[in-house]
Length: 316
Image (cartoon, rainbow, N blue to C red; front, side, top):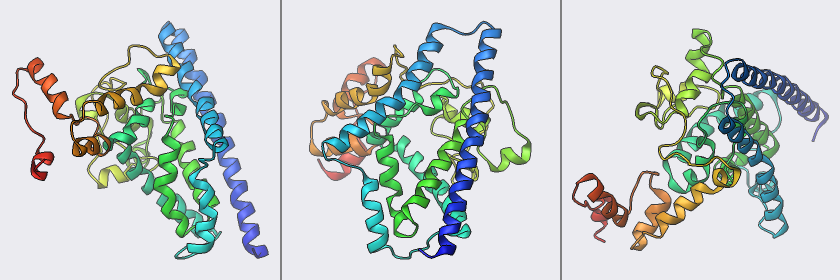
């Protein structure tokens, strides 16, 4: 690496460090504000406390799972990224301020589609449902991650290392996540109109965490809300948001929170009666039902059992 490039790399890391530090203090202030407001208005319930603790517990649990995976030899997708960049990159765009700008834009665009996939592909929702399972929205639940979230993020962003240094791509991904922490709050109602028009905000993201019918699968954005507006998934916050998932959890203990998606997924797999149904359990949206599930549900709704059109078209 030539001295000029190395100098730019050091400057980018310095900027990234400052950015992280500023946002850290910013979200700490919001978190204290949230707790203070609940104490002041006498809305600090034990369920809220347990919900918050469960959110925070997901971080060390996922870290230990990563260590265990490395120990038994599964490793990480990121282990292959330097080799892919050095040996197989289509273009090595290297370290520069313009490549940083492109990476930040591309990783945000990439995040939009990855996040959309988390909601529309059942095997990805199985882990992402952890993040949406809280009855509240607050700073701690911004860090409420599912066990396989990091794996799918690394997998979907892997193609970027064929153009950009893996470390630079990592900065783009993490910087995107750092920004999103502050938008997990109900204390900030609205930002200025120009900001709301371009950037993701607490108002926009509260919609994303809503289980209200009009809010379901809306506002996938990371930093820029323009992606939702361009691709037809934007919804403004109008009706009061009801947080959580459509099938709420009875308990908010850490074990239930972390693994409820896998339990529900395993139950769905057990109802598959053909290879096609088994495949669809993985790739269809979360609301898709096997024939056995529809047979169980139909009497409750007073409806006849209908065959899935996708399976019918395959003739199986």
